[in-house]
Image (cartoon, rainbow, N blue to C red; front, side, top):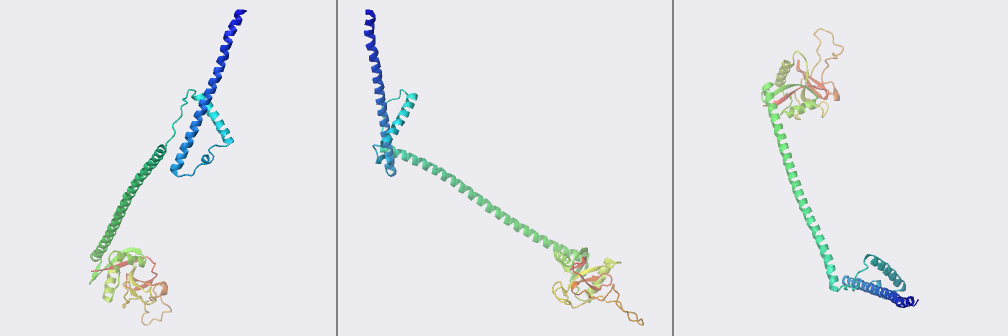
Length: 323
């Protein structure tokens, strides 16, 4: 029994002292952690103040009420507790030394670094814009060259077309005088293509001539012999370059000159001693008889007489070419 009392007297005081030491260590740790948090808040407030002064901004809410309200203290306390618990979990052995406060030079250095980054970004944008401008200039130059080439090509094509037209006119003139009828300073050539009067005139002009325009009886008789020999034994009407489209009864050549020689068809006269014919033959009435419906003149290939026809009727035609 005495030994048990002796053991209790020795162990119990040591256990009580160990418990008191543990509580003291906890209080010391809480004091150090609270001091570190207070220094961290002061450092952040100082950095914010330097930034506001450097940027010329008005003082924040924290400058107006630096001491804070009870609610703020409670909020800070809650945040401190949460941060304390997180740091205790993640870094239980972190250093409790105070962090260095930022100086104005550090703030200026930070702002200059940000400005340098922005300047570098702007420089890159300017480089890209310059590259785009260079590309646009090159594209415009290429487009201008293409337009010039297209213009030169159009001019060349136009020149070729004009040369082709001249060659066709010269070829038509030579063909008309070699294959057709040469009479003085004119050559007549029959075409066996069926065309309306205006289309026939256009084809003659394209080959360097015009629809035939017999100016006197000599030319009329020579053209009659040529057409009779070319189309015999048939009788085909052939377009001439004579019309009265401008005014009814006013007959003009295609060149605008007024016609002074006519060879209109006339119905056959009755034989001497025979009674008068009650009416002209319906297939060979006197010409012209079409009025405003028939304004173009064609020549019969058998006797060379003139007949007026609808200008849209498709007939053979004869061209004349200068020699």
